[in-house]
Image (cartoon, rainbow, N blue to C red):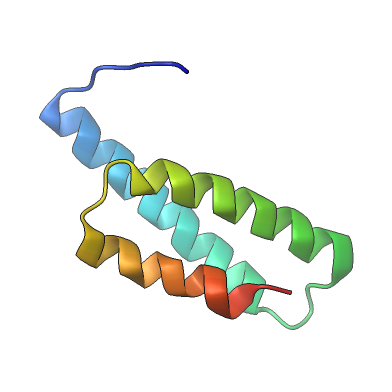
Length: 74
């Protein structure tokens, strides 16, 4: 376990970066041209980033990306 301390501004920036990354991966996962190992790799990364985001996000914000886990499972 690694602990880190962030200022409010740093937390907002981290929140923004994680949301943008999750949005980008949801777009990639929704692309029908993506298949097999590539899609699986993106999904594994999505789960990791989602868990990171879950530590700092409000439940209301988190639900938007949790549905991506259910809907995008290959």
